[in-house]
Image 1 (spheres, one colour):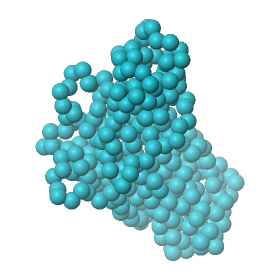
Image 2 (cartoon, helix red, strand yellow):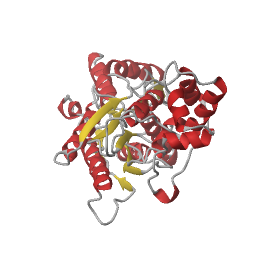
Image 3 (cartoon, helix red, strand yellow):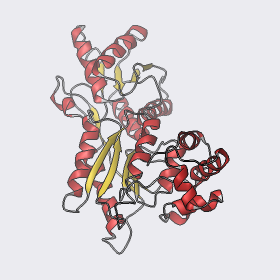
Image 4 (cartoon, rainbow, N blue to C red):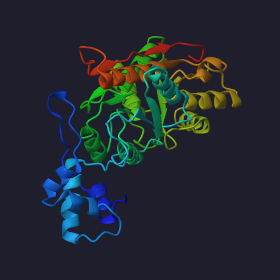
Length: 361
């Protein structure tokens, strides 16, 4: 079955208001019959309008497209082959598959699903909310029994589809102000604040920050905001901010960024980086230039990647239990799907974080 281009464009570009699920209850996903009633046509007419090359008038297509958008309807491509709502899989969407933090989260999900009869369908967004929207639609068309997302920032249409999907939705790696359903995560800003306060307690006063050039990595943006907030509360300068490279910034970009920082502020005492990868690049570049870490400049990362514990000097960082986030998210998902407990799982699980102090500071 194909979605007619006119209908597809209307869905993508419409800006209808987001729909709330009352009292945190799971809504039943809208059906083709619901679309038909909203558009004032028969379900057969809706079915024909969604088929490529069918003969349905432009005015009718427009009414159907508007109804689809308002309801958050997603075409069920599995309906013709399934006799029940059990599909045997759950979906997870992560920003990157070559980032060890998110691969650890995926591993935690997979391990927690073992023995449940559920399989994992994994997609990655490359840090793009528009790509996330495409993946949400593609996955919901196959009717997963639940979906796990990274972060709490989504396009309006992506959020609307999730709210109307009628399945458990778990947002991770963040603590969104308005959760769609359930949350397993932490405050990236508070975690960075803790790192700043810990290092300020060791006597550092001239802090610099290295992050990406765009806000598409919302977790990175939250860490930067936490950095600024902590320094302002301590009464220390907070303007040594280097934005370099499109997220996720690489080791090479971290190396180039620390050079820019030292050219602009040569008396910087400690450089805090958005991730351990960029911090490792900065650390290596300092060593190439004959700078001693931490004597000439201290460096800290975020994420506690394996490389942070293996480089020389070993790197100070923030551990956020990436594996545990995935495991707890999958457990919360399966509890909701299978109703294994008399009490439903708590809507929000706040995961911990801690500063891991090593020789780089």
